[in-house]
Length: 416
Image (cartoon, rainbow, N blue to C red; front, side, top):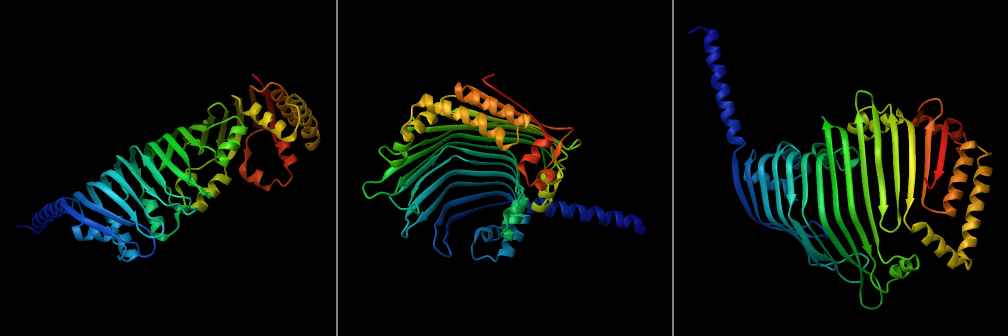
């Protein structure tokens, strides 16, 4: 047999052995029962009845060392960085405190699939419920939630940053985040019986598409973020003076990025308050390199400073908030609401142009705001770079705010 042929057979044999070893390494199935992780100082004990692991590339003992608080930090980091598995299922995780701030929070239905060194296909939690003792005192707080789902995620940089103790360079990548039906009731510290405020979140959804680590399109949708103050509490009485029994807020955002042109289009960023109003921001930005999304903290900041803004528009559509605020101010100052309306409109029309040296753009804003105060329906202010985009680095160097007006064109309108 020739040396070349012998070498070919040897290479084939080594390849088969290597593939077989890899298959074995990626096929470890095991179950860990009765896990109790006690805090090294004050804090909660983590209680897990069962962890079911499928297709792992580490042994049962190595897997356990990842969450063991006694494992040296560098060893834990090394194990976390190499970890792979097909799935990990945990039916229930309990956080329990029995010290001066007792409480128990139970997380149900955990599962993570296709995990590879910080990247995973899907993470899901069915829900959680529990109670805890806030630092402020006043009694126990309770919380509960519906499902949480995270898909197509890469947390490898976040894990590295966490192990170093500095999350500034975390830069996680998440394709989908969906969290629903969260509620927490927390006490107001008082001398009498605890007054419980309530915060609810109907839904929090984020989706993004990527080219590598660079986000090309991002959507965010937050619905029904509701705060209900405890009856007869100071917060409830303060809100009632404004004409509200609760606050219900939502947020929607959409942005697209083109790496080849370094252009970012913020097509929608809207904060909407039920029976209050909606504030919408849009903008066109350029000169923003991919490092603004993927680099270290300093690299991201440097990339942003190289960027510019071509246009920004701000629109407010009123749905009751302005008049409620005006009536509240009039009541507190002992004035007639109509007199306050005329006073505010006249003040804006006179002071803003004076402060900006009679700039034409400022005059447009003053006129539009004055018209809005008289009949509050909507207000729109649009800004464009005069003679081209305005660089962020240039804005950073401007000390006198009136100098900015020389670099921009302003349009403003009310109730259109």
